[in-house]
Image (cartoon, rainbow, N blue to C red; front, side):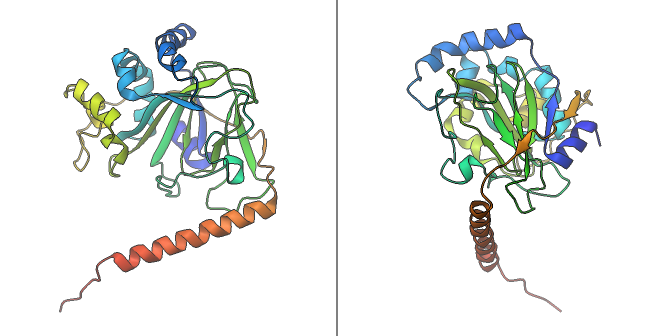
Length: 287
């Protein structure tokens, strides 16, 4: 197993070598500025994958360096997120799931298989991100373990161009963007081909499919053209450099609040499993 996979499997997050130069990041931002400037009233504004394709940014974002990252993480990656978004400035609340645990959560659509990597996101900061600028936060603790106020977490800060990958089944959140600048990043999420990607059915991905002729095996795989089928073998790639990300603090959420939320989550998961087992057909034994 490569160092990149070892780090991701153990702690769920790793720093990657920057995939793009400062000049390329500036060019990406310049092309997206007109779209995002027209959406300044939105607390969380998107540039969807079809829009990225139309302005010529998507093909550059999914070029050699980024593909090397994706195909080093897993051999058969399929997209289920691929967009740029920015969040409002001068905010005091996490921009998503702020009602519970100050935004800390795990993604329910991501598989959790110990020592396996099935659902991963890669973040590319497109603006400088300090601790108060809506920095991504992540707990490298085993997500099946009980959370405590002292549970370690990482506040991921870095300049525009900073790139990192993380497992979506671990606890994470976007901290409030208290700074004066809207925080912008490119988000690309991948999953193993064995899992159906419901996100690829949305209109934005469908438009990308229409604009992207088949024939590029890597892109065909990313776009889900091998869903339900065995993808062809792909050439070996050089695994990019990855480094561990040490904790920078702790969750610092009252233990009482953490216990209440985790008890509710445990009960919900048990009920879900029981419901699934009742709906599954009963096996019949034959002599």
